Length: 275
Image (cartoon, rainbow, N blue to C red; front, side, top):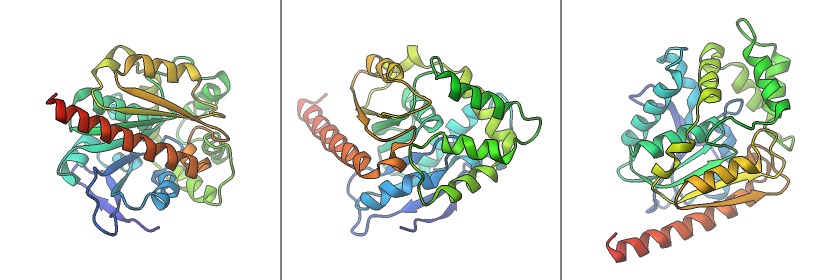
């Protein structure tokens, strides 16, 4: 699977495009990767779901045009919104893992651009309750004066996974070569953010996916999302960590297909009701 790219959007973000061979009629999937992951994290699922158009966003590319300060997260969310408006002609399915999931929630709450459905993977409405060992890893990584030891960065990448994929070296290299000041500015904002009270503003069908062996997000994070988002379902994938689309792509693909089919049916029912 070789998506076309990188393509630079007007917002400054790079993205990679997979076009369905026969021309997809369904909403495209915009995929946002986790911090300490990379856009290639989504490739195992793209390979299993090629009949959809996919846009894989390289969030780290925001470092070229965005300042590494307290505004970095909000500017990144705005840039993703602009990218979606640039590449899509209608509502999209927005999928985000971890930090990508918090960005996806932020965009869904804002109501711009219009979404068809939302997929939140290994994420939560806030960082409250993140397990202490993972929080300690983040703290050590953030405390580096300029750039952390490569061993610490590699350990952070591996903490997202319950497996050792063949592409692990590529994942590590993508994070090692990313801009550390920008990465750390976004991450600090993520750790301070709490969207819990704003979750009822998400007005599209939402799927929450958690890996059973997730070292960063707990069942309580899932409960908060389900309680706050009006139309929300959740699945837990056995044998998967923080990024189940890497660890268990077949199980993730099955859950995604089932959800999108169900969400499409609910859209049809609402259209028939005129609501």
